[in-house]
Length: 259
Image (cartoon, rainbow, N blue to C red; front, side, top):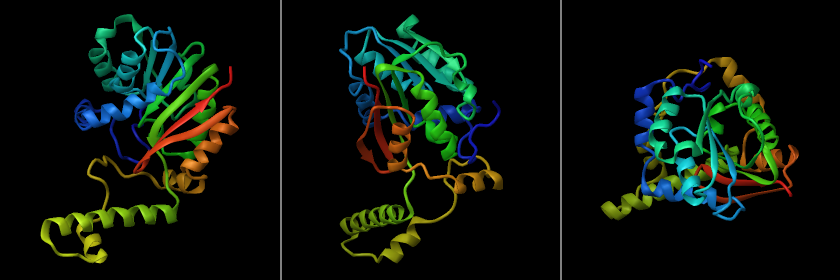
């Protein structure tokens, strides 16, 4: 488990990088967004349910789960040792209610140390980091095997966008920027001017260049769009699947097993 991110976007092995990342995702808005995950878990808040948090990082989703389900038992999975150390520190107040497991989602062995099935498997901003759509699809099958009958998989994560929809999204962002500039200056800018102001290049948090083979594998696979992911979840065996909301590039997906 030496690879942080096939696309070179993140270095989850770096304690400094992890601290910076956590600092950017601790807002009240983010907390409200994550609270929707346990709200979709179809059990009474007083029940003693068993929950798996996939790619749980420093524990923000686990925190929301245990605040909604105070009698739950949670297994928090991640493959970053700095993240797991942060989680153990931040979740210490929950005592034995949380257990920690390290595993790399890029390999089917990520769940080898995870025992039994769960009433709910939850995740946020984690699975998309494997980057390979074929691997995401395989992970969904591996997760299905961990969900007990009557249970669910709730995932708030980034989804890919088709080229036409991606163009529409970029256009909408430019239109919002254009309106914002007008509110500030009283003058309308052209979309060409807006595009020039937006800049180009790799995201500021990129840590390395992806290798060509990685890019070829991603390009050759069926993209991990929302529509495809919903279909993949049905194909691996979930009885009912739906999207419960979109936020720009992210979607809140629920997949449910019949009792």
